[in-house]
Image 1 (cartoon, rainbow, N blue to C red):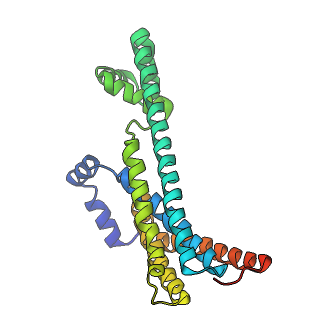
Image 2: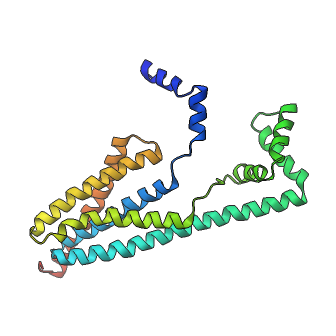
Length: 253
């Protein structure tokens, strides 16, 4: 670690900076949903475009297939994300109800669970008893602690409707980009596909860079990895379309 990096790290761990960082909300779940929807939207839509071009279909066919995929797959993904988040929320709620009942029926047993959880972390004696007393004095904090420590589940769950809508919107907006050149009839099919490829590559890299913020990874590496993933999927679709065009003797439209 360089001297400059060490100094910056020390500055980030002053009492004021630590308080500021811990008080601030973490990366938004909506950002994660947007990245998820955007990546899938661009990958699947451009893969359809590449497959249609490889098969020798016209721009109109590529548009029809692209828009059909954009709406159908986007809706399917949004519903899947909604159901996933909703199931997670319901699971957390069920755990809360279980712990609420346990605290009501066997409070001392639940206190013992808190005691053993923190004893395993090195607390002991009077300090351990103080920790148990502070946590169990607040019913919500008590339940939240049991949910996190006993079940290993995060207590904060995003709203399912927001998750689904953000995913759908990101899928539509980003997935629409590779289709835009095919709306320009003045361009040749080759030009439309070339521009679409460039736009898709830009979107892949941009979303990958945004993903680095969510996953705390290097921006350039994350952008290039997403670009390679999307490019690989599109290349596979193009080769498949070209091969099937030869197998079924499809003429260019």
